[in-house]
Length: 120
Image (cartoon, rainbow, N blue to C red):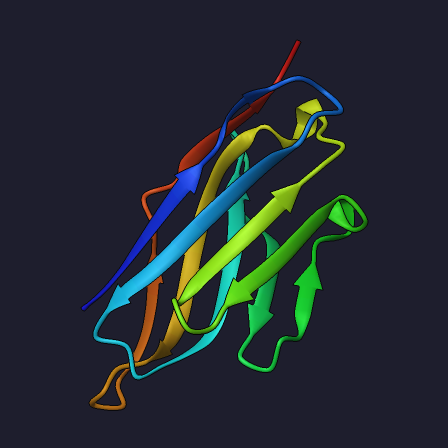
């Protein structure tokens, strides 16, 4: 079983910055991809950014140039540095971890989510 735990989040003014972190733990043989998703009220969950085992990153167009995803391979952690935040970035942010267990079973695990609110 793989556990995903997010931290960070909170209330920030427009134009401000905020950092999120996430740790994947448990029965992990190899992490293939770590990603951040978000879901605003009344909207579908969407990919914000992801990073694979080779370090390749992918960003939603709406956050390119403002958000940066990074990864600590040794600690199975992923970070999301958010800057120039806008009210439309307000959402619950979820961390996702995909990979293989020691038994080579594929897993795709989600964290519980952390609220990010951008408001005056």
